[in-house]
Length: 162
Image (cartoon, rainbow, N blue to C red; front, side, top):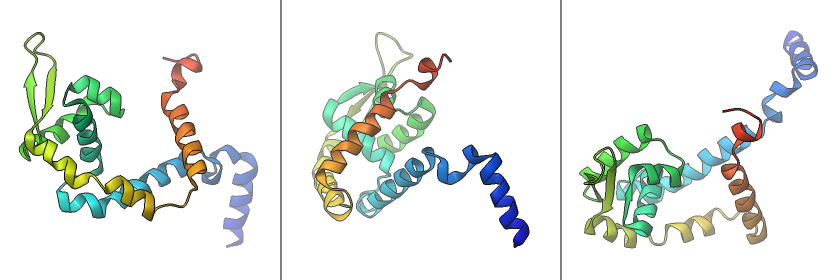
């Protein structure tokens, strides 16, 4: 036990930057997992994962979009989107077709069944807001602004990388 305490002190002094408690990324990661997990009771009965749900949110808004645009909007790569879109297509919520102009581009279009799913999902944001209200409205708006500041930042370009 004393050895562990000594190691912890030495670690804290020499490698303070590596302590988990000093990382901004960890609470963001843990919070994201907690929030996404809290959607499960609402999405599981509908046969949706959280990622499928946010894809459907884009589809309800756009109706038709190519995979590249969808990835850009959701900050997801094609390797993540392709199997997810296949499952949504199998469920009858979207169709995927190659573009006539450029067959390298896949167009995703919402189906009537996918559009009807919107009604079943309508109250999920309200339920989430009322059940998970640990932030005031002001705090929630401030957090939203800060998160999008991080999301929209290009860390590689701002630090001379890429």
